[in-house]
Image (cartoon, rainbow, N blue to C red; front, side):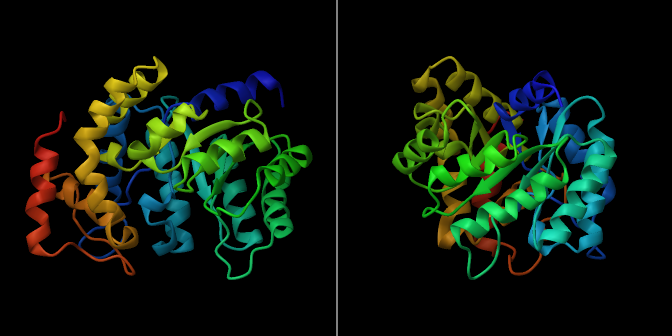
Length: 303
């Protein structure tokens, strides 16, 4: 794999990395038509990097067959208009099979979810990601780091063995820890994606991030694009203007240990008539008294 080929993928990570929702139909299954409509809305809004099977897509609430379907729908909708960063995870064989499925469909990157296991050693973290990355050397691989105890040198160790590890979605809510982790791993070796969305993006960009993930982008792509334009130009006052616009929405998503992270996004989309508000357990719908506030926020944004 040429360095140039990976460079196009690195560039796609240094952007708004959208995490699409997975809309559900009245019968409880994936609403394919609504899903296509939301994807085309993102693409028409200027989004060029999509992550099917991210946490805002309710990755852990989908069946194995639904996760494959979501990947297929996203690749089909995007065509040549966007890079696809497919979320994979669970046990190693499942993650490898999903990564190979993504590759066979034409996706060029995978994001490896933080291992969900009560006992994760640092060496085991390297082995887990190495097994996935080694199985698909032609794909760009992006670990999703949520473990504050993981040191940057472990990421460097992984990349030494697997040079297709090209970026990191860092989602520990500590800008100082991120700055140290990135420098210990190799600041210029990887593309650093701020994994906690718009509210953390300015502080993480100041420490070396060049992209950020977003669930809010499902509702208002223009806001996310306004923020990254400001951050790229070093205009932090302009970035913080967007921060002020999205602050309350993101506070609602983060409340109670992020219990309503997906719920608030889907409620906003439902208020705009774009999909149903349904989420799957262990998430739950907003109570009636919370819906009006979300709708009011969404109606005030540039759509």
